[in-house]
Image (tube, rainbow, N blue to C red; front, side, top):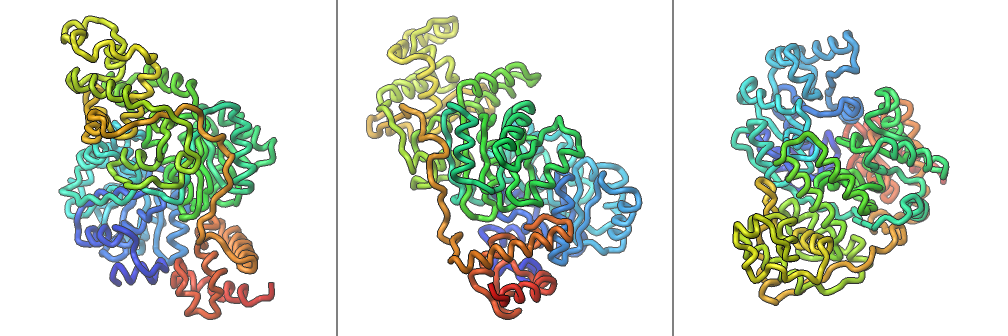
Amino acid sequence: MSAIEVLQRVYGYSEFRGEQAAIVDAAIAGRDALVLMPTGGGKSVCYQIPSLVRPGVGVVVSPLIALMSDQVAALRQLGVRAAYLNSTLDYQEASDVEAQLRAGQLDLLYLAPERLLMPRTLELLAELRLALIAIDEAHCVSQWGHDFRPEYLGLATLADRFPGVPRMALTATADVPTRDEITQRLALHDPQRFVASFDRPNIRYRVSERANAKQQLLRFLQKEHPGDAGVVYCLSRKKVEATAEWLRDEGFDAVPYHAGLGAERRAANQSRFLREDGVVVVATIAFGMGIDKPDVRFVAHLDLPGSVEAYYQETGRAGRDGEPADAWMLYGLGDVVQRRQMIDSGEAEDGRKRIERSKLDAMLGYCELDTCRRQPLLRYFGETLEQACGNCDNCLWPPDTDDATQSARQALSAVYRTGQRFGVSYLVDHLLGKRDERASRFGHDQLSTFGIGQELTADRWRRLFRQLIARGHLDVDVGGFGGLHLTKSARGLLKGEQSIRVRRKAAAPAGSSRRARAPQASLAPGDEALFERLRAWRKDEADEQGVPAYVVFHDATLRDIAREKPADDASLAAISGVSAKRLERYGAAILELIAAPA
C-alpha cells in the first residue's frame, strides 16, 4: 500500500496534516530527518507509516518503558504488528518477540535506548532488515537542553552500525542551538529538517502571582475543571505528596508521582491516570514525557519551571485532542530564589550555569509579560505570530501597565554603548553608576549611559531587561557568556518610534474566568446523551482489554459519531478515526448503540 492508503485504511484518516506527508515521503525515500512537531501534532504517524510501507521492521527508540505497552496496544487495535522489548518482559516473553522479529512477523519494535545499545540487541537487529530507526524525544541527547539523558549519547553509533537505514529524530521542543546539537550528536546524515508550527491554539495560557496557592488552585479546579483529568506540577517531592493528599481531602481523585516513590506505586498511579477518567496526577517533572492521553484538560504549575522549553513541553500535555485546555501557572519571588540556588549549588560547569540562568530569566520574563503570551512563546522557538492570540490571560484580561519607554531606551543604549557583550548584572550596575574594576578598565564609567538610571531600583531594571528580552528587543548569547545584543526590533524603541509598557499589578486572579469551549466541542442535548453512552461503552471495552479508553477511540471520534449518527458501515467508516480494523471490531456494537432508544 502507498502512504496515503495506509493512513486511510489503517488509521482511518482521510488526509495527512501539515508536514506529515512530506516527512513520510522523505523517510520512505531513505532520507534522514529531524522533525520538530508539537505534542499532539501527529509525530508517531511520521515514523509508523514509513515502517509499514518500507520493507523490514521499524525500530522506535523511546525513553520510557512504562508507556510502551499502551503504545503497542494502540497499534494492535489498528491491526499493526507491533511489540516491545524491555525489562518488564520475562525471558520467555522476550524470546517470543525475538522469534517474531526473525520470522519477519513484526512491523514495529519499541526499545528504550539502553536496551537498544546492549550487544545482544544490536546483534539481533543486525540479522534483520530494518525499515527505519526513529529516535523519539530526541532533545534528550542535548546536554544544553532541559531533559538531558546520558544514555541517548550512545545512539550516534547507529549511523555506522546500520548504514543505509534512514533515521528520524523527533521532538516537540528544541530551540535552534538544540536542533543543531541533535543533528551532530546523533550523526544524522544531511537530514531534511521539518519544523511544524509550535502553536497550540486550543491551549489557554494563564499566569498569576502566587497569593494563597491552595485556594487559587482550588478555585481553578472547582470552577473550571470539576471531574477533568489534569496534571499539577510541583518542584519538590514533599510538595507533591502534600498537594495530592490535600486535593483528595477536597474531593478530587488525585495521585502523586515522583522519582522517590517505589517503581510499583509509580507505575500504578500512572496507569490509573492513563486508563481512568477524571484522575489528577500531582507530579514533579519526572512525570509526563511521552504521555499519550489525549483528554488532559489542564496542566497546572504551582512552581516556576526552569526554562521555557520545559514549560512548553509540560503544558503541551494538555489538549492533545485539539479541544479547549488550560495551561495555568502560579509564580513568586521564592521560586526564582529557589531555582537560582539550585543552579548555583549544582555541579555543572560555569558555562552550563550561565545558560541555565539565562533560561530561567527568559521564563521569568514570560511570567511578567503584560502583552500576548503566545507571541513570545512562539518567538522563543523561532516562530512569528503576527497578531495577538486572543486566548491568553493578557489578551482576555489586559493588566494595568506603566509607560517604560524612556527607561527602555536607556537600557538599550547602555547595551549598545558598552559593546553588546555584557550580561544583565553588569548593565544594571552600569545604569546605576556603580564603579568597579571592569567599568574603569573598559572606560565604561566615562560613557553617557553610566549612572543615568538611578531613578529605578536594581530589581526594576532587571525586570525591564527581562521584558526587553521576552519581547524580542534583546537577544541573549546563550552559547557564550550571556551577553545581550540588540535585535532589529530595538531600532524603533531607540528612535522613539515605538513605546513600551510594563505590568503594574498582578494578573487577574487565576480561576476567575469561565471555561471556554471551542464551537466544535459543543453537542446538542440529544447528541450529548449519545456521546456519554458511547463513552460508557468504550470504558467497558477498554476495561475488558486492559487498555486505556483512548486506545479504543478518542473522544473526538466518539463526538463525531454522536453528531453524525451513522446508520451503516459505510457512513461509520467515513468518520475520522474509524479505521478498517476498528470498523471490523466495533462497528456492529456502535451501530446497535446508535439505533437503540435513548
